[in-house]
Amino acid sequence: MSMIDRQCIETVKRNHTVHTKSRRELQAVSADILGGSKRSIFATQRGDLKRAKSEIADAAKLIKKGKGIIAKRERLMQEGMWRSALEEYGEASLYFAAMSGQKIGCIREIPDTDTETYIGAMSDLTGELTRSCVLMATERKTEEVTRLLGLIREVVAYLLLLDLTGSLRQKFDQAKQNLRKAEEIAFNLSIHVSN
Image 1 (spheres, helix red, strand yellow):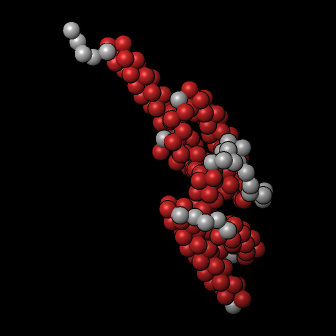
Image 2: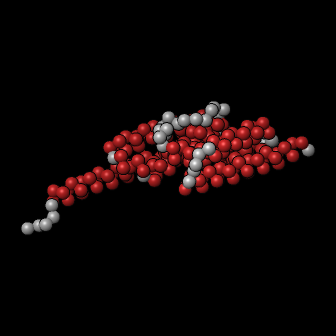
Image 3: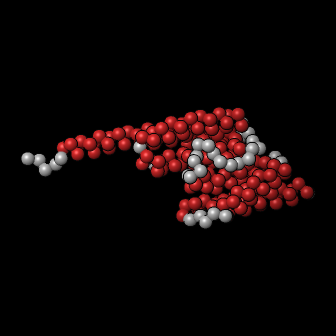
């Protein structure tokens, strides 16, 4: 007589199989969100805002699909690749808003309760804005560099209000470094423009 409860074992096996399948589906969706978000950022850097907006819209549809997968398996909400994809999407959305002259604020696809993802996206935004400062400075677009520097300062000031620890503290430290770089870019540009 077996000491193993076959019915229990079969239930565990079935649940594991479903979970694994759902996890793979979510990973595939996450990879597509991540890719679309990166393409949006690249398009925004090049000034192709139409393409950037299209990539963001496609990624938003994929987020909806991912949320459908998670609704059936809530444990998947904490999957690393999903979290990374949401953060990259957040960064792409905020960067697009900043470069198209919109206010940066809440992101519909990222719930207000997911503060870690939003704060990570805000911190990473400063890196993209700093890269844009470099591009604008090479074209001697002083007003745009000044605008972006002001936005980076606002983001860092906002993040400073939060008591960040762990990986978010590291991201905040990077945001402060980005601010310092942007200030150097603006300073160097002002010297070259005045000469």
